[in-house]
Length: 252
Ligand SMILES: NC(=O)c1ccc[n+]([C@@H]2O[C@H](COP(=O)([O-])OP(=O)(O)OC[C@H]3O[C@@H](n4cnc5c(N)ncnc54)[C@H](O)[C@@H]3O)[C@@H](O)[C@H]2O)c1
Image (cartoon, rainbow, N blue to C red; front, side, top):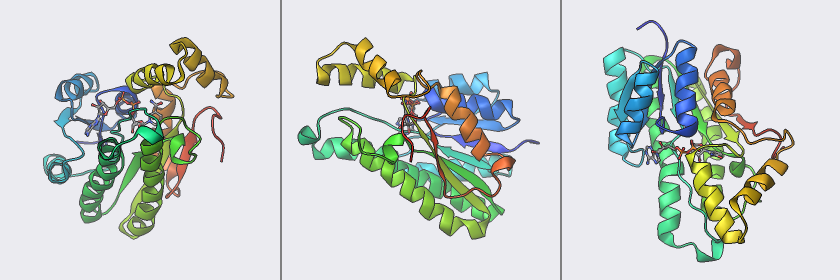
């Protein structure tokens, strides 16, 4: 294996699939990981990489996944913790199960998947981790997603804490904060928000475009190139950063 080896969690769809394609186009051998084994296999075929079925809420499986990649390839250069879920509902209606569903994947999953990668990277002498947070990780002015907001603020804080502790091991850790990205997750959110607001889906979509100064929905590829930058040599002195990639929809 000549190029760097990268693992992308949630790589079977949306942003994760675009990140897998972008890293492959830049010479990475990509391990496309997803809890949906068929989706992972299809993207892995496309990028001439390999599929790794993995549910990031399974901590033991995260550890053996990271170890397995290092054993098979002798290296683990880049890990992208991208797997995430959302479900819209009013804060006043949220139950413990709703909170657990979101936090288990988005925060606990990112925590232990990225930890599994970091343990291997520390042993091998370094590496790069990118967590996929959200603009909802920097502002709570987001309707019907309180548990998601809490999880993504957590990812931003986790990124800083990891960056601080892992720098002496030669590991850089950053995150990206996308805005309104056109993916299957967005299709679900458009329908939920339309129902909760009692308005047509097209009007919800138009309001999201109106909230984006650059005047269009974000594409998964817009996110993928930012992840590839953070995972590449031009970001060599950047760590602990949570990079807004949102067309100006939220500026901090
Ligand atoms: N779409 C957006 O507008 C948007 C905006 C900001 C941040 N994000 C974040 O980007 C990431 C990707 O979102 P997307 O829009 O591509 O969503 P998506 O639903 O299209 O893809 C998510 C992928 O993650 C996988 N996944 C879900 N739970 C998993 C688990 N427990 N273990 C492993 N894989 C799992 C799914 O099978 C799916 O393939 C998420 O972390 C999401 O929160 C999305």
